[in-house]
Length: 417
Image (tube, rainbow, N blue to C red):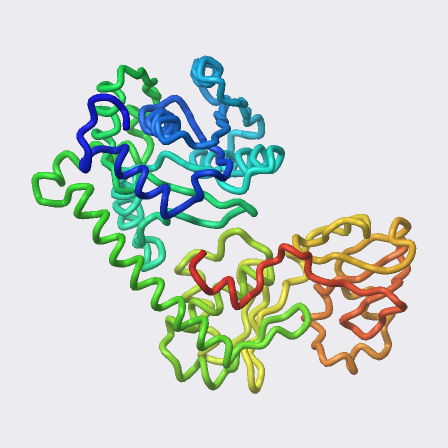
């Protein structure tokens, strides 16, 4: 135990207990360390627990001084004999939501780094305060149950396991720990920039504390909502196993069963189906999804988030929208985020959507069991303008297409992970 820390009430004890539940102590672990107090506390706690760690620092390259901060962490790790790498983001084009794009890039860079080292898991320095701030931010955006739930202490994403072992620890306790141990940390200037929602929420929480809405209370509420979400997710999973079919590239939701069930079961199943068919990281916004559900229940087919939601006699069918599908790629590559081709001479072919011109070259496509809308966006193999194979349209010619091995199972995607 670190010097001067009171047993039973300190960050080290909480960290050690949480890590024991999250990850084997002997297994290699990556740490994301920015140089701020939270992540540097994570580094020092991991050292105190004698974990087998490697460290990465993401330089978002967005402000002067960010490189120096990354090099500060690099020098610190070097002094401890800990492997360290600086990961630089260079893709910001000045458009869109900066914080959201930076967050996505950060996870991508860290996942690639971990993969290069053979690391299965990466620990992050999110604290109880981060959990409470996220709850309030999402509350202000009228988030539903999923959005208001607590951050998960263990999550699978980008083929890696992400750990948050400090979610029970308030930020101030980590600063106290660092000061007690004589460790320095850096303050990010953007933490005082009120143009960011999180910073405004952080400042507002000083007043909320006086009303009893402190980080501990908000974290407890988020955790309770998380338990409710887990129960609902399992109910949705069970219902879908009885009333959802995966047919080729499409997802079919049994119309009568879902029309008579609580609308939340339809919302969750439909959202998962859209994300599964489109290979999207995120689904449509809540309001757009609600309008889509309303249309389906009224008997109207609609486009939504790169998919077509079709009303059939027996089912609601979710299929890929042709105009939203990716452009053709060499047949040796993955197309549209999820399709892989198999067969002879793939190097001479491209893999892409069947489309209207391709459908004209398959005279017997009506015997395939798929409708025109489904087939237009289905994977096909081409040699320039000549159609070679369209497996879902009934034209295989010794070729086949399959979902890529790491494509999530649809039913599994309904469960928290």
